[in-house]
Image (tube, rainbow, N blue to C red):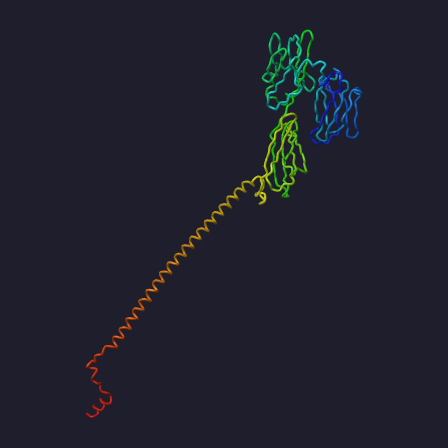
Length: 422
């Protein structure tokens, strides 16, 4: 926005690292033609084209960030301007910024840029700030080639009408001659661009306001953490997908930890979204539990943050498990260790009980053997005493002789003599 007679600064910044050969500024005329204003070349420097010298000058001449100044803007300077980053080998990348003057449009209040996510409903509104006799309000879409297509109309006498090609896509939200707004349903990439609201008044004619719809798409970032070769370093990477390219930032709350060796890679997907991946090494990590965050930002859209905590002791990493199956193996290992400890404890208890039982059995048997030995010795002692007593009684008692024993048995010589005499 600028007032008539002011200097206007237009700037474009390339958010991705590319090999840029040249940056060119162009003005898009109402009939769709593109007029080159100024150029900054990697080898030949800056040039302002004929017809714009003294009117346009390059303020910041750079291949990643380039801006121009339009001096003393007039009504004919109003419109959209293109900045083209000619890259190798990707070709041309184009940005658009539109200049709107207060001189003709200050009486209409509208939002210069409306942000909407892909698939959402976008609300566009215009309000006439002065009391005028409005006959009709018309909404138009401004195509990239400069053509204007009527979307919807609200007439003082005939009411509201949505034109062919926009039915079920555009509808009136507030149909009024002083304040008029429309809703664009489930916006898609082809709905992006600038829209005009025309208040047709009598007898002043048409008063125009401009509001531009800019789409965004931002998905929740994905944060990954993996071990490095050093025990005091951890590799952290975060990826976020969006349209246009999002800004991805890694952060860690602890002051004694810091990220180093940052690298960012951008990949353009087939659906027009861009995936940005930022990878960094977390240094000063000593194994304590630490929380790492990742933030994805896109234009003026609220950022999306995700957090993940690095475990205090990553036993699965020490044992060489990978990131994907480490936690499962770690859990299995813990269960196995606990089971082994329980089995060993039970075995020890059973062994102690068996030893105690065996010891009691041996003690009982020894007691029985001692009792039997003592009884035997007692019996033997009693028998010996009885024998001794019987022997003494026998000696004291006279022995009776057998009559047969009193007769002497003849000797062999006597028997011989008897037989010989006969």
